[in-house]
Length: 402
Image (cartoon, rainbow, N blue to C red):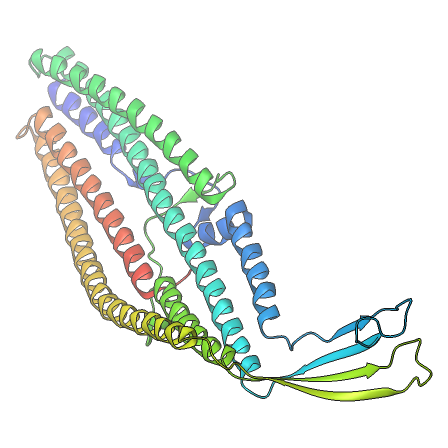
């Protein structure tokens, strides 16, 4: 084969290797991050358990808001009035001193705590799926890039053999390209193994087998939140703890107030007169040696501590939001720079290939240009991972669920 024809053949073989095939693994459909999170919430047993726990907490909180129970006592004696009591009595407590209102406040606080716990469980699932999704998508891209690099190395090896047959290249180039083929083959095996392991971890995070193609191209939007305390699970839990402390203080004070009870009584069965009578029973605490005041002071202290802890957490959340937003902005800029670098490397590869065809560049020059392109593409994948990780931090900082 003439040298010029050999150069042209090698150039064509190399050109076949550079293309968009390494950008995404093959797949019939794409599973986005939001879809993976939604599937995890629907299929994971711990997510379903968190919803059941919230329902149970809501049922338990409902009992705190109920009116006092009405009690009926009935009995019979062998002798007339041996114990001095009636044989039929109906007790109906009357809430005139705020006990019922304090109970309803406690119920609302308990329900808020249950809601915060459920939202925290959902946020934990989202963060776990996000991390596993990013790792699996990155591993798929790395495996596809390694497959492309191996194909390029093998094509370059064939082109080098053609050049050697035409006596247009030294024999050392074949040795160099052979080492490159071995390196690319080992890298492909490692990348495929990591991709399989990452996919298994994603299956565990989602709670079911994921067979679709993954993508890091898109990034879920993170809307601004006017009041982080209404969305972030940790702030919701602290607000619920503050409300619980406030309701506890109300309950402590209500317990020290009088109680009023209406009673309906029937005279003993053995009595000749079987009439019914009504009675109002007022009970008032007289002397508790300061126990109620101490309990109220303790409840007020817990309320003040919970309020301060919430204020500190709100300030810290505001700074965390700003930091996460800044990190996401930097990640977006880094990705833009990585895109420009990949474009520049594509231009270098095209120029080097043209020089190779004209005899102004060696085969190793083309190989180095292609390697620089793959490194730039790997850097772009890292930039995409960083952007997605920063998005996850901002989602958590604002308490946004996908």
